[in-house]
Amino acid sequence: MRKIIVTANISLDGVMQAPMGSEEDTSGNFNYGGWTAAHADAMSGKAVQKEASQKVDYLLGRKTFEIFASFWPSNAQMWPGINNSTKYVLSKTVKNSDWHNTVFLENVEEIHQLKISEGPDIQVWGSSQLIHLLLQNGLVDEMHLRIFPLILGSGKKLFDNNAIATSFTLTENIITTKGVFIAHYKRVGEVTPTMSVRNLMDKYLKK
Image (tube, rainbow, N blue to C red):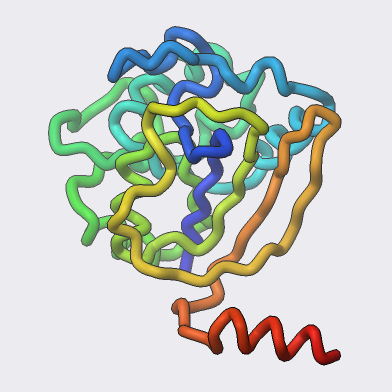
């Protein structure tokens, strides 16, 4: 079974909209495009390169795909694997593209089938609405997050209120020189109730 891995830049309040440039996505009158730039350093650059160098396929929402398709086909030297890897795009309105190795999906059931098919793991970049859908259906196996030390207040967010309650464990983390917390989380199962906070504190304070 293929893993679906969400990789995202987010602010402290969970905004993931337009992290890379001012014109990337201005919908909803979003005025902070390119908000990651001031926090770039060698450590964060290396982390992004590591993600981009994985031998994976990609699952994208329509909006993110259109942004990618307008740039990466002619700039693949910056992301060598993006042209040759398969790009799966969830869209009910767009059905074809000149960008080779692009496959269009129409619904979550086709994502289920993709997940159980043979092939490399699948990374999700951007695509906030798609991520919401994946979380609602328990389809996210790992989350690779770059959490930036700023609050944006509004914008498209990584989480909505409809995700299935899921427990993750931290598998890898670093903090960059600019205070970006880079964390990899792996799904471990359902969220189960535990003892009350008071009892839990009593348990550990007695040690």
